[in-house]
Image (cartoon, rainbow, N blue to C red; front, top):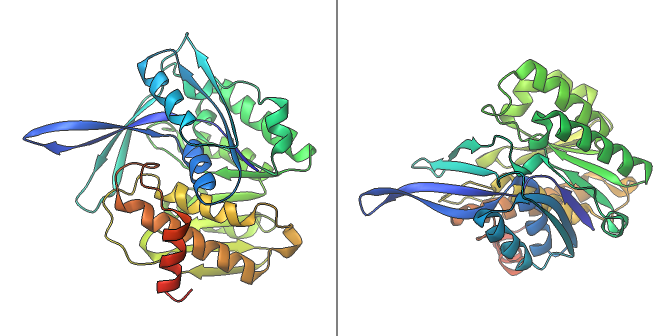
Length: 305
C-alpha cells in the first residue's frame, strides 16, 4: 500500500461564466490527489490528513468516503479552518495558486494510526506542512519512523512561492526531507531552485522523478537516467497533473524490490505516469477527471507503448 500523509484542501478553481467570475469547489491537496489517483490506477492507497470543523471540511469528509481508498483517517479539528487554494487558469489550462492558509488544518496533522502505518510499503509525505514548525517536526519524525520500519519514503517538493517566501530558508528545510526520502519528485522550476548539480550529484542513490509538462518526464537513479516522452493532449486544466503522473509512477513501483528498478522497469513506470498526467488535464479539478485503467491502457496501446 502507498500511504499518503499531508494536506487535504479545497481548490477553488476560477473562471468566467455568464459575465461573472465564479469559483468551482474541487477537492485537492497534493498528497490527497496522489492517494486518490493511486487507488484509481489499481494499487492500494491510504491517506491521513486534517480538516476544520466547517462546511468545507464536511464536503471533504464526504468526498473521501466516495473514493474507496484502502484506508483513511481524517482528523476534524474545531480550532482551525479547512485550507483553501484559489486557482486561476490561463488560456492554456496552466494554473496559478493563491492559498488561504493562516492557522488552517493542513499542518495540524494527527499521528498515523498503527494499523494504517503497518500496511504501508511506501509512505508519501506532502510538503505544505514544512512551512510551519509543527508541520516540519511532524514530517521529519514520520519519515524517520518509516525508514526505521523498512518502508520507502516518497517526497514531492511541490514548492509554492506564496507560502515559502524565503527561498534560502525553505531550501534548508526541504533538503532535510529530501535526504530522508528514497523517491523524490521535482518539477523543472524546482530543479532550478535547488540547483542542477545538487539534483544530479547529491541524490545519486535516490530515484529522482522530474516532471517536464508537455515534454514528458525524466528519471534518474544510481548513475542512469532517461527522458520519457508523453502523449499529446490539449489541456483544459493542469491542476493535479503532476500528482497524477507521480501517482502513476508510484503505483507501478510499489511492491517492486529496489534491486529490480532497472532502466526498463523505470521507463515503463514513467510511460504509464506520463499518460496518467496527460489525460488528467482534460477536465477541471485534480481528482474528478482522473483517467481509468482502461483509458490509460487504451492510450498506451494507441501510442504503441
